[in-house]
Length: 56
Image 1 (cartoon, helix red, strand yellow):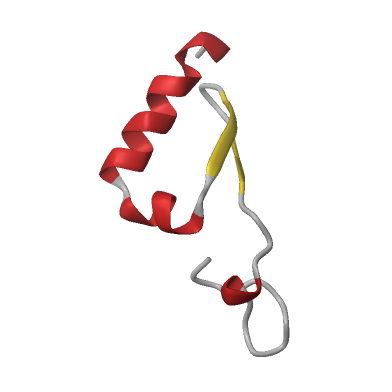
Image 2 (cartoon, helix red, strand yellow):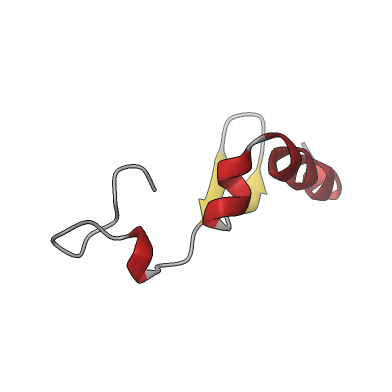
């Protein structure tokens, strides 16, 4: 997929997968074989030892 198709994919994901909005996920790259997703490091997404929660 070209970078020109990236915004519609992000919009579709945000509209159809509530957790994308909840976590504030950002799709930064998408190709036929790879997707890169960025997520902010927020204290409320960390587990009891300070690492990223498995659900996040």
